[in-house]
Length: 226
Image (cartoon, rainbow, N blue to C red; front, side, top):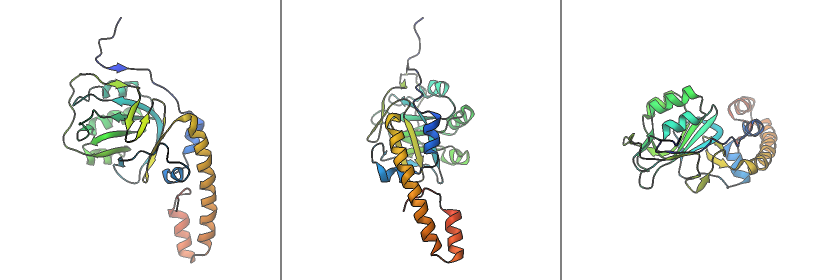
């Protein structure tokens, strides 16, 4: 039977495998930025710090004013997925994400959300520790109008075209969204750089006073870039 849904709901894509997640689990965004600029998402910021986001993209395109397509997007998602949301042109000042959707995403086991637009209920979302990258914060929100929208179609976030199943990697320093077909090679280069930086850090730390050396070894992540 034909669907009565006003939304364009395409199948979920699992483009990111366990090996890719394991590779990127120990790689910072700043280390990726030393080996490539491809996939770097300009214009979005983490809602809070410290923050870490890693997962498989489920893409969502919203029509003007209407956020109702986020419900089927949440239903279609699986644990570890990241919702990547494109707002309608001119709607970037609206918030499509807040406390209640964060609670639903937590129950579902999502890894986080990326929004080419705004987030609201900042205090509650931050208290829940749910990773959010967005262009801003707003008290003006979308409405449940059932006007349309699409799930698992290509979307645009900043200068980056995001496809279902892309790899999403973000932390305090920024966000990358990478084609899984290229991500393994980029990750291998970034991992090599991280190892070289760790060795350089150990050499530098050895020249510091004992107390400062101990602080450096305990406070800095292994892959931090200088």
